[in-house]
Length: 293
Image: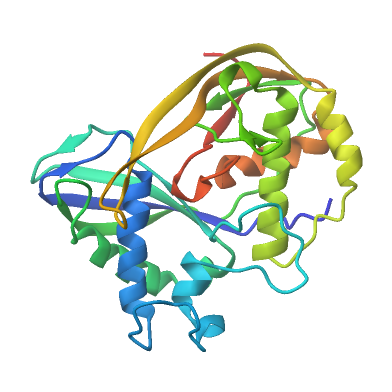
C-alpha cells in the first residue's frame, strides 16, 4: 500500500479565553468551521467580490484551496471532496462565561500545511467574531503543535480491536444514512478506506495503489463481535443560515474482529482523518483500543 511514512498530518491545539458569553449548540464543530471560513475568506480574498463563482483567481486563492477545494481534473472522487482540515471540538460545557478558557484541536494535512500563518490569523479573527446563536466571542491565546506527523503502525495487526466513536459517525449505504441497527463492520471499515483514499489522492496527489475490489471483499468478512451503537440526533449551528439545523449520526463502540491486516494502517490513520461524512467539522472521530476499559 502506497502510504507515506510518517503520514504528513499535524494536530494543533487551539487555546482561547472567552471575552463574551458563548453558548454552543449541542455540537459546536459546525459553528467553529463557519466563523473560521468567514474570517479566512475576508483575509484571503484579493478581489472583494461577494461570491467566488466565476472568479479568475480561484486556482490560486488560499481560501478556495483551504475551505472549498475542488478535485483536480481527472482525479478519482469518492463523494464530496472535503477540505484539508478537521476541526475536533472540545469536551467542555455548553455555556462558557467571560474569563473561562476553551480549547479544541485542529488537524491539518495537504495544502493546509503550507499556510500556518494564515490559518492562525484566521482563527484569531474568527474567535473574536460572533460565535453561535448568542454571538459570543473569544480571544486566541495560542496554538500548540500536539502531533507533527502520524507514524504508521510498526506492530502487526491484531485479530480484534475496540472501536470507540468519540463523535457521531455519518455513513451512507446506497445513498441513505445508516441507523445504529444497520451499521456493520464492513460499513465502518469501508468508510475509513474511502476517507484515507480521498485524502491521499485529492490532497496528497498520491494513489494508494491497492485493489479496492479485493479490499471491499475483505471488509465484508469482518464483523463486530460486540456492538453497542445508538442513533444520535442533534443540531448544529449554521452561521450562513443563522439558525440550528438537524444532524444525525451513530455513536457507541464495538469490538472489530477478523483479518485486519490489509486495513490496519488505514484504521490507524483514521484516528486523525476521521471516518464517514461531515468529517471537516469533527464528525466520525474514533480511537482504537486494546480493551473495553
